[in-house]
Length: 320
Image 1: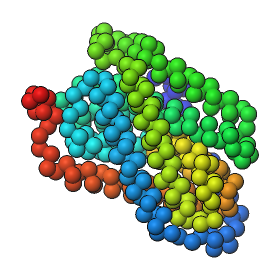
Image 2: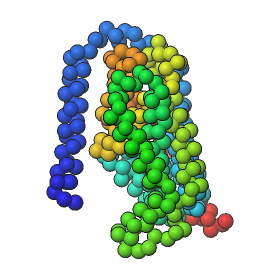
Image 3: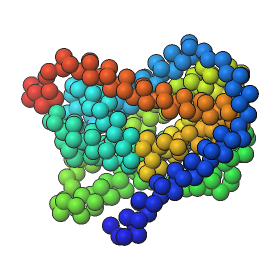
Image 4: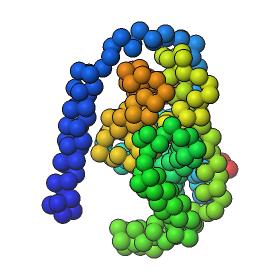
């Protein structure tokens, strides 16, 4: 790693959060706090959002297991793998994507699953998640003229280029060549074709992530409805687009733990089109705090459910 790269790696997060701090101070000084009187908290919507939030995380675990199976891994015992997913999911709060990916590889390999298949599945999963959420958000916001206030033609072109590059990278022929080349450089060995990604794995993962993106968007919509009652159901599609765009961009911002600051900035900017900015900020902050609680609730539930799972995936594979 060059000195310039190291310097940028250390500098970018500080510069970004300096801008966030300046924006936050400006926002607090210019906010019209009388708008907060329009908040009427609805516990029913909040409860439904919590159910949807947990469903989104369980669906993510299911999607990961399906990708593993499509790659030929003996990913057998569901409760154990859900627990592995939940533990690794908390790694998103560490800057960079490595802890989230390495966590799944480390914990799942102890269950007898091939590290190569885990590495390939984690990379494929991450790429699918970003590309699908970007694609869905772009399609929704493209057809909604309200987004034109913040998404100009240059940004649209950048998003389209990113999606095209991502889709090409997901083509098994290209994906496998890149993986094989990286493996040869690092391990000095030939990457076995038995670990290659198949078209079935990509298609299946794509369909599952489309469902996941919708579930995640619904949970955000319900949080918004629980705080701002005037938000109409006619705005539902727009809110789904905002949710997915914020999630996708925050995943690309690897310098920010769990996209903190990035996701909220996008949410506030785009939500301000359909509600007062002050309420948009409350929704963004509430969603962040709620998301942290849901992550730990997901972890706690999976740990509790996994207590009786004494049979390991290695033992199951030996029996089969």
